[in-house]
Length: 304
Ligand code: CP
Image (cartoon, rainbow, N blue to C red; front, side, top):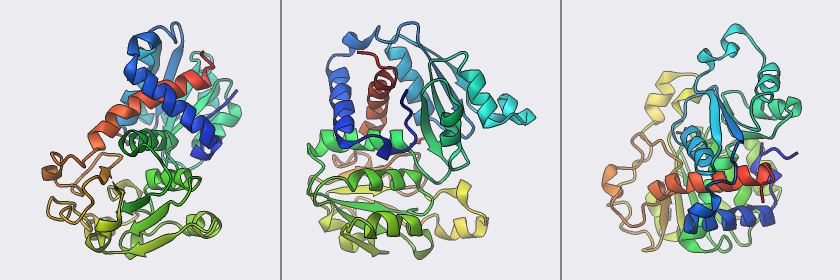
């Protein structure tokens, strides 16, 4: 039985296989309409979500399966003090596969150790978000057609942004990928990533606070929201929340074929005036999230 807790649980061949299946689903959706008939997905969301939960649910429905679950901890027996381990053991009696989001880093890992069915990490605190990364990789693959030889700018909250952490890990396995890390001092990447990933693997990277000066170098610009829910102090959030606001003017020096990605939700960090720019790919990303999660469900349920 396989779980997906960290994007590094999948090797690059498996990631390519998921991308290929997702592309085939996009081209031939009817071929997949009955693949998960009589299978059930449980979505256990202890933290808010729009895209991840609904795309998982839409994915299972489009595979012919069914969905059960909860969208907030308060409507589950966690509110009465039930442990994650007991919750997961219980839900495994009703569902064939579980997607779980939790505010505590490592909670889905603990869940997987007690589970009788595959567990997918749908985001754990400020740590990881592997299925967002699969979504990002499918989008990059469909836009650029390759992962090697690209410069990717990560902009905004690189400290708490779990989607950044997972995507940086994933991209580290491709050739000649350069990272440009754009953030205020207080929101730089965690030290464990700097030492274990960037310096540990000799990855080429630069850090800057100035988005416009690096814009012409970028093949991908990955914008992120400042993660209000992870701050201990509201004053710090208010001071930092509008550090970067992408506007059409700031894109003037960008490559014509650069792609702007964002895991969403956005607050102010991308002006809505950017949405009509052909380089704005974040709503395509939203669509891709459903298709790659369909491919992942098929893989973890070992459906041919
Ligand atoms: N990208 C993402 O995780 O969005 P949600 O929080 O809406 O699921």
